[in-house]
Length: 446
Image 1 (cartoon, rainbow, N blue to C red):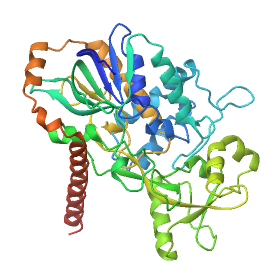
Image 2: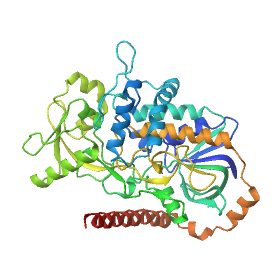
Image 3: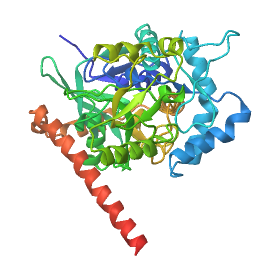
Image 4: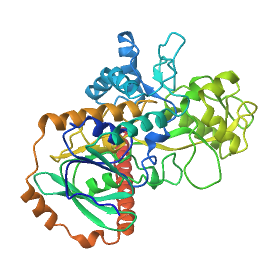
């Protein structure tokens, strides 16, 4: 049976790249608890295929900045975009230092690939399992740290707070049903996106945006809850469950999209939202449930070297990508909205931080540029840890105890019901924001 301490210096909710990198950058003298709803590999970070962006050299700064802003429909925060790009080389150096193996050219330099919305190759990758490679290395490093404890099957249900600050979390053990009220000087929400509330998503089903719903319920600012990204190409299937992503790198290396008559119908390397719209329009014209993605323009040896996992998965589904097109369809993939946070991860509530897909720091704008997600998560999680280290101030435990005493514990008795309510909170917020946006657009046109 899991035994958790009552108090930790830092509690991190989520064991993807954001949560793990935050934990690794908290001062080694601080006690850190990392919890996750399922096993640590059930994170979108683990699933990431394409890669992670890196500024190749200073001459690419402006084009990288412009590509990110253009993809985000210029709703990005320029300061956040600048911080991400400027910090990209440092993050890749950190990962290499942890043993992450990126593809290299014969001379040892990074073998950059290109994806939709990018004006030049600038994406580091490890075959088509970059997320798995990075997450696995981070996990090994975190488990080797004596001050970090990683506990699976524990779900956050609420935060402990008063009008002054956050003091920790309420959580439930998924194995024995035990309810925990855990104190922390600092709490970091890194619990991923909201894909689990959608019928068709590339996300793991356990990722239902609980932390975002808690903040909506508790009055902690959440921005752009309706900014949901659809990935253009997931493998079409009638089976239920998570949709298998066909990496954007496939199109970056030369794969083309075809209609029902196997004719090319769009520019595959435009930003994701534009390609998604083109696919949906073609499906409407053709009265079909999918379009086709043809990888045969890519040299076979490159397909096998760069995309072995995609090849294997498609073969298991009955498709040989070296000989035939595969059926693809858009599916929910990423969440650009989230808990409002600054470039150092701090939310509007002192003591509470949010990083990764859970947060909205403005770096992605209305639409995320491909392969900026791992970079954004890693960089701003590191900055959050550095901010905690720099301003560390222990919480007032008497105030924490009073905040805990004010909790209505009956609310958490039926956690299944509560988590369903959280899903509905997010759905309602999305619908409300979409309606508000439609109204504003109507007023503009009028």
